[in-house]
Image (cartoon, rainbow, N blue to C red; front, side, top):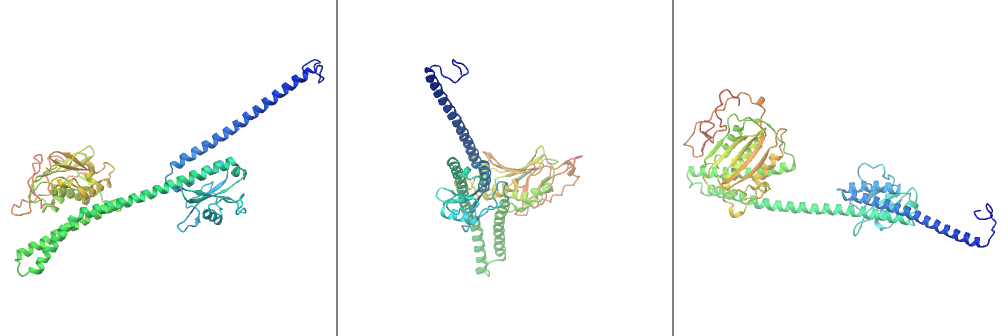
Length: 486
């Protein structure tokens, strides 16, 4: 058509046949190359989509924290890739296949045959539609493998069997199942490791508990047994005063044991979250006075200085718990500081809180150990036990009490500060609103009773200009500044 004679299929010269053959061969080659390029582009796009699907699924499986999360992620991605409803089945405690608990997804298969799934789980083989085993089933069932065992079964209801059994699609499905099995195995291994860690921690705490309370329990028990035995076998030989002293010793040691047991029970309640706080507005001097009253025997012979600033407001707290905190701090100060060394209770104002501090004059807390003091049953080095602060189980409970009792205005907390001349334990509580500070008269302080062997003098700071009170008082107040509300 393009050679003479034009617009005709006749060949005027035989050499044109060679030209036609060459052009025809070039056209065929170019056409085949173009088809190959187009086919390779489709394959590359398909592989890219597969890689993206695998990456997306592996990323979501890696962030899953439970088997339920793994199942939901797997069902969603399997449906997106194969356009088939599916469900993942796991055995129960008896080894029988059951449907997963919880609400089903829109992509979930609800009519899976559990008997076929059980056969696949037991024999570790594919079965169902399109296979040689149980082909009458409506779905295809695939085992999900872990490292060395079958973890579960995937039931897939295919819309088109070619989308499942084509070699490329089958490889993709096997990769999906392998990733699902690895994710489930990882979570189960993590759960076993966590369970083992909890058992080890429980055993460590049990040993620490026994170590911490063995001495505290053994000492009062020995005293009670010795005193009771003396009374039982030598009652006729003992003077009345000796009987009274032995009986009082039994009472004191029994109360000491009761306090120790109560501390342990309170700590258990705090950790279990069953302890209910009764937060009310209370005068701070009343809480301090009550704590000192309960410790009058332990504090005998120690000067205790109470520094409460003028006009101190009421505090929002559970008075029983706050009193226990102060008692715990004072007991630790008495136990781990030199005898007859002074103690100080003070309070400072904050923007919306009042900070209460108990300070001693012992050797202090080693640097870097301040936070560890509130770990259960922790104590400082035993070689310093008689002189250094080692709050152990007595301080773990107060710390928990404060963290468990936050306020809308401020968070209560306990802290231990390093000091080269002693230890200072502080707690912070919400300060009252001025509207809560009604005019109230200070409770009168009882007159000092020097003749009492258990009384001791509390010396308020000079800022009070307050009278001297004794530890037998339940309240120790100061005169109200003229023209000011409490």
